[in-house]
Length: 314
Image (cartoon, rainbow, N blue to C red; front, side):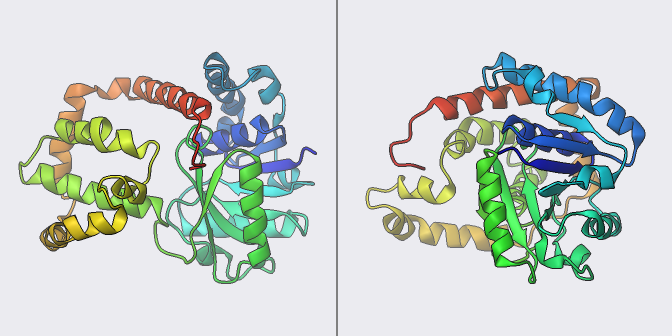
């Protein structure tokens, strides 16, 4: 039976979450404190849905967008909603204010989730009467194309709420993972941060250009990582599996880790160098165009993964 989902924040992530919930057959109420953002939301959302329809990933853009309505207040969005997905600025104070208001307005069984990229739920829910129902549901941008969502509770989040959140996310087509304790950046951004730190360092010391570094990932590691994680990757890269791989290459990686620390700071001169190299390949005025290209490539990859049969259930 369709539920009602409230989305607080009509920016890029909020609109993407609205697609996730509406695509799964649910009603969505989209609210934003900035009227201009709310006014622009449905046309932008429709454009994304038209692309999904063109790629064969949904049957009807019109049908999906018809399940989404914009509303004038947070209270209107939360009226009868089973779930709130907060998608506002990555700052503690605005999140704390919104969650306090949502906790007051939402029904007693509604789950209150944040799209926070790095801020733990404990930092903006501790004083709430309903803090047991609050958690982070951190997506990857854009969540309607990249299905992973990190579920990270605060120390006081009810375990039953976490279990229900996982069920809800699976039901709307997401791939939830459980982050068992609060760490800054959760897991995905920590992994991305480790790769970025070494990428910046290798470019800074002249080992490789920024463009060739990108090729190393997109035409190398990234091809495997689009359907396997790092542990499955090494499991298949030695005849005897993980233990065999670690026995063969463990000493090398131990030496590498010692060499990689401490991480080089992302200083202004280095950022300027990489920015200049990127702009040679893509001028600033074409960033939006390239983002559309990225999303369409992700749609094609998503369609391929959807059609592929994985006999091992991975």
